[in-house]
Image (cartoon, rainbow, N blue to C red):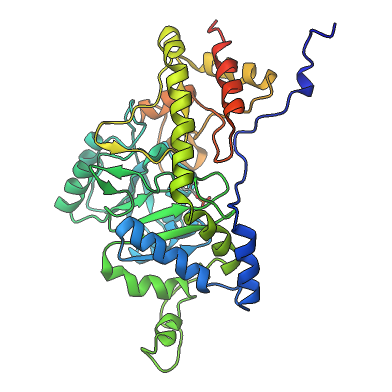
Length: 387
Ligand SMILES: *Cc1c(COP(=O)(O)O)cnc(C)c1O
């Protein structure tokens, strides 16, 4: 009987594993030794400077999450009850909620069957006199068709906020994601390429928003101008909240930024092992692999497969679970949610989002994943037969 493998003895391969860089904890200690662990300390400034330099944005402000940065964007755009905001149905709930919190109605755009990104060809028809923002999401770190989106937006005088939670260091026609719209938001949640547990950033390209963004982030005060000596006392000047992360978290994050080339290179390598190893199997089984258009450099955020049917997807999840491999599906289309229904959305509104949401499966993918773990996942997937 000792030839039968005891499945429970096999180590679980999780979907994600939190990552700390070599210097993350040493830098947190330095923040304590500096006697500055609240927001806007030296590590926060270093993280912001890094993002401004590497992405080429006018201003980067660390926030406590991407959700938080999206909420700041909604305040900056003066979103009011009755306004409409266009976003893909296939996204995380915060892309919508940040604007809904200010009273906006989310208008859901369908996605493209190849990149799973907002379908730019559907955009024009969704614009109304009430449209106050367009929020494309660069799904899996592959760029949306930004030329088309920006030209429709500019023609109609509507600002674009890139939800770039997946796309840090991705490029569209040579341009950095996050540097194209009026603003962009980043996530440093545990599951993202660069993380501090929970964290985010607001990137600002349109400098008209910079000063007010600093005020909103500092509880509606002009504290930032005070510290720069531009006013002689600081006071309450606008609405706002506490959007600053602790410098401890910035320290943890900065250690990862310092090694961003290595982190991205290792993710690129893992992504390519999955993609190359599964190609033949995928073609044979009618499974689609991710599509990266020639003019896009992806951010290597995720590796997913599109199965031929919901049943095949559910069976593969079960099959991998038996092999102690965690492979989740992803977003449920927002237009099908109970909140979506309250805004008048119905099944059938975004057919592509409905179809891919049923068929997508994400494979384990994280900075510290090993070659042997990847091989176990690949063997597990290839041992699956579509019934
Ligand atoms: C992760 C994610 C968010 C939210 O990020 P948090 O930092 O957890 O608030 C928003 N949008 C997308 C597309 C995401 O993947």
